[in-house]
Length: 561
Image (tube, rainbow, N blue to C red; front, side, top):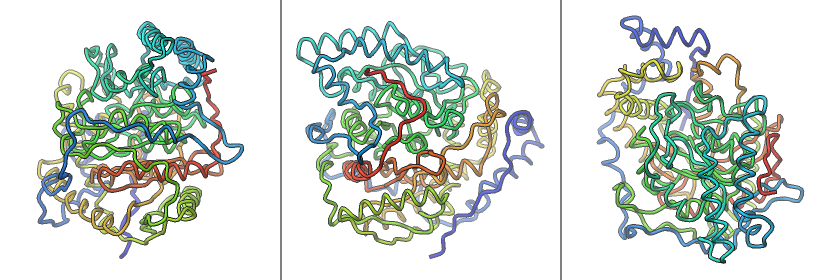
């Protein structure tokens, strides 16, 4: 089978040029001519010509399970008691959730002291040059009140569990009282009256919710450059991008402000920043985590998921937030979330699927690091199976049409009053989205059904599909993007090349640290599995994690000390 993904050729736009092009795209005839050219670069004519007899997704989806979990069911966290962070001798050790709870149990510190350290570190991060811009809203009074309650529970010997008093950041796409959910904009400022379901579950487990984390505006980009709140900075090189759109959560975790953050993923937005910032990120199965209380941006592609310093941190957060919930019907047809087997390092009998031309369509250093990750799995008993996945050339265009159509629809209500208040990169993306037709959206959803079938067929013969997470490491943040954002289709497709499939199919996927390139920038290794098999992905990611010598980031806050 021929590999049919072609490089995307389109001009890079930023600064004054982007301002002009964004305004032109919002105009009449000239905007339509420009839009037609840009959408052609994105592959729209090819997608329009692709024939299919399929019904639109998710009517052809097979997510239903025979024994759905009862409402409120969550994972048993007991397997985590036997799971710890690890790595080769000399590997840098991030402060983990377990490190915090052990310190509380042993009386070496308290949640109140940690809260003060987080507040101080957040202030220091804003005084850095350049400012880190990981946390964009923090209420010290609220944080201290949470810490006081947690400290009392620890003193009385009744902590709520392995997350009690552990700092956790929340992406600014998800409601957390008493903060507003700006979704990265300059104009959405109304304070949330209640927590999103996932945030409420973290709070009920005792998490120390440290504030709202930065994001790419309305999640419509993958660099983390935000003209309103500032560009989130990569702790391994503050002049490089974090990836997005969960940019602030990744920056906060990788810099040590917290061992866990809650992100959201519509096209790689958890896994891409996890990869670029050298941490772990999990996008669960579609519907595994309730979207109630998350900003409505892309209904058929959206997933909430955790980012963590280690696989155990991600597993802990996942185990708490996953499970059916009454207000979100997408969560109902799922089995009970499970962490069973994640400590098992014996991989005999497991099959790793690789479509080699796709796997190798990345920078050489990225490919080398991900090959080493695969070799680690093989050394533990797994076997490699060569697979083929047809029609990958449709993947990026089908995903693009689906996600920008849904995002433009979600934000149409703000267009009249705030259309010019978005960053120019967002304005251009929304203008192009409005040039798509209802036929384009429906046709994309029909092709999506066919693409889902291709991946389901591949996963009949293998247990996971392995790829790099991104085709490149963290790109430089150029000076001309800070005020306007950036339109760089070639860079965007390199960052999203391997991530979009899991959103289109709804399949779970994880990014684990696989090493570093020649410039010391992190490389992420992605595995995508069958529906509801997050525990297997966590198990495999832990094996990879134990083989990689982690390096300390340049930006590091020691809030536990």
